[in-house]
Length: 414
Image 1 (cartoon, rainbow, N blue to C red):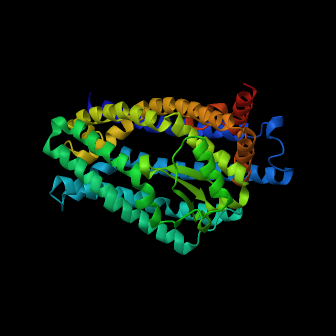
Image 2: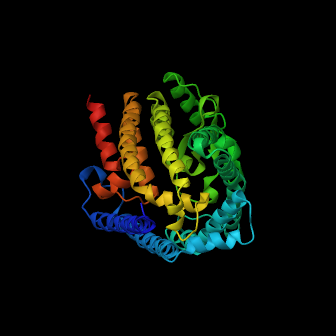
Image 3: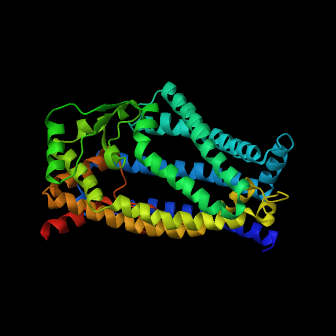
C-alpha cells in the first residue's frame, strides 16, 4: 500500500470518527426531549427536571467544543506533517531509539494535557460548580493533575519503555512478548489498584461495625460470597455524586462505597446495589471479560507487530523511516474501525451482564430496593433519562434506567 493511500485512509478515518461522534451527540440531545414513560415520572420534580435538562445540554455543548478543538489540532498535526517534524526535532538531540520514542510520546502527552487543562478547569469550577456537584478546591485540582503526571511518567513510561525495548530486542516475537507483559500488568493493576493508586488521591477507611456492615456481611454470607474488605472512600472532597464499586481479585477483592452514598440511600438500598455487584462475580462476568480480552489483545499486538516494521506507515505521518512512535500513531488510527466493532460487541455483552446482575439481586428479594437505588443515583447525578437508542448502542456499557427497571420487573414476575 502506497504512502499516499495510507495517508488518505488515516485522514478519512479521523474525519469519519469525528462526524459520527457529532451526529450521535446531536440525535442524543434531540431525543432527550422525549416525554418520560410513566415508570420514570416522579424521579425529578418539574423544577429539578428542567435543571437536569439544562445540565445535560450544557455538558453536550461543552463536549462538542472540547471534542472539536481536540479534533482540529489532531487533524492539523496529521495533515501538515506535525508528527514527522516532531520526530525529526527529537532525533536532532537524542540518539537512543527508546529514549526518542519516550520523549516523543512525552511531549505529545504533555502538550495534549496542557491544551485540555483550561477546559478541565472550566468543567470543574464552572459547570460542576454551577449545578452543585463540585467540591474540589483549586489546590486539590492541581495536586491531582501533578500526581496524574507523576503516575504517567513512572508507570506509563516504565511499561512503554519495556514494550519498546522488547521490540528493539526481538521484532519477530514482539507481538507475543508485549502481549504477555501488558496482560500481566493489567492483572496486577486489577488486583492492587485500590492499594497502590487510590491512596494517592483518596483516603479509604474500613467500614465501621454497625447496621450497614452487618447487613452487607449478612447478605454476602447468604449469597455464599466471602467478603471482609469493605471500605469507605472520601469522594465528597471532590463531588457530591454517589457511587459504589467492587475492585480486586481473589483475596484482594473489596467493596468501596463513596461516603456520599451513605447520606443518600437506605441500608437496604446499598445492600441491593452491592447484591448487583456480587451478581457479576456469581455469573463470572469478570472472568469472561478477562478471557475475551485475551484474543482481542493478541489480535491487536499481532497487527501492531506487522505495522511497526513498515516504513510506509511512518512516512504517511511525515517521517522518513519506520519508528516505534510514528508507526504506533498510524496504527492507532488505522485500527480504530476494528476497535469500534469490537467495542460495540463488548458493550452488547456488558449490557446483557448488567441484566443478569440485576436479576441476581432481584432473586434475593432486592428488586424494588435496587430500582429505588438506581432512581436515586440517577436523580442525584442529574442523569439523562432518555438517551437515544443509537447513542446507547454505541456508547452505553449499561442498559438505560428504563430498560433496567423493566428488566427487574420482568424478573420479579417469573
